[in-house]
Length: 189
Length: 189
DNA sequence: TATTGTTATACTCTATAACTATA
DNA sequence: TATAGTTATAGAGTATAACAATA
Image 1 (tube, rainbow over the protein chains, first blue to last red):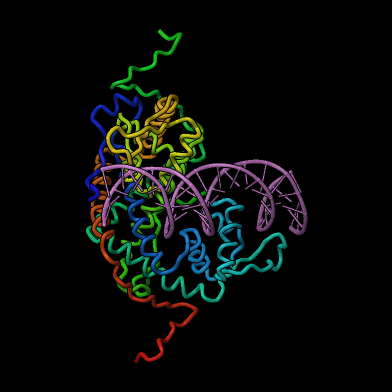
Image 2: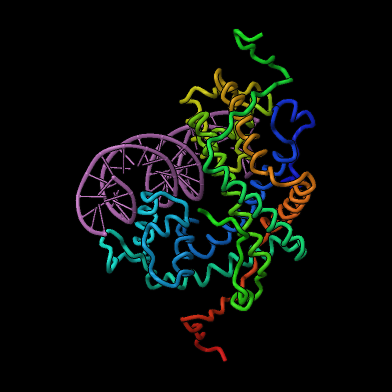
């Protein structure tokens, strides 16, 4: 049985990693593992409904949500994939007969992607699966718990958006306490 | 610029998806997107340090954390990958000269994986990068914010662990309000 | 010159099944 | 019989670079 208590790091963590924060690393580990567990469960359920990759299904959902054909690069932006990956995903979907490509009426560089027959059905069966999975996964949290969570997560994303366009700082080196002695930098001290 | 305000769903959401919960779906969307944004930033930083896939690095971190050679299936369990995938990941790492395989002393079915020379160095450079990324990503949250977050996430994972071993419930069908009229089930009513 | 999309290449990871050898 | 690991195969996604067409 998987242990689902909070993930924690050792007490001497901040000694070992100067500049790091114990609570931040614990937060990050719990965030990533929880999202991962949710996606795993979601995937399990989605695959019972239709054998599509997550990206492929996301693409369909984006198109359906837009309610109109979209240019390839618009989908790629929302999906956070490169144009080359987008081409590959659309190839897969087109092969399955779920989307179609057509010429953009005014800008001839662009290709408009539209849902094909059959795709609407898949989306209509898949979305309830996704939302039921969410309802069940968060069943133990009260409405106010959920609101707290949503706002905390949004604040993290705001910070991450700033970090993503900056050059990362150089971290202080690890100071290992166990077994292996720290490597003496030749020339220091 | 990416919008980092909370992700919300439309007001008529619960009408459209009977049995779904607006706050739960919003929580799920924010959870997944936030984890994704963090992993994106983490990957960006990791790749500046060493050109390893996330799985490959995780494998090294697991081995280093264990402090002793581990059998392949032990790593596979923690990494949540199949034995075939594990073989492939270890092949990659071995090709890069970062791990070695050796025979298990008592159980000849097993193969012990150990860190090779050079791997320790990579782990020592990578972990500070990971933890600094966490510190920066969560910089706007107070210690008590972080503790709240960690406990909420753990409760979600606990629920997910239960769901993962159960047969998923059948979701109620979508009731689309816009554009396309709901498909009338022939024979109903 | 910048944008849109495709093609080509090579690599990583995944899933599945069949297989060997052990226990 | 069950477990540990490998091999084989096929598919999906990624990154990168080069490229054509168009704006």
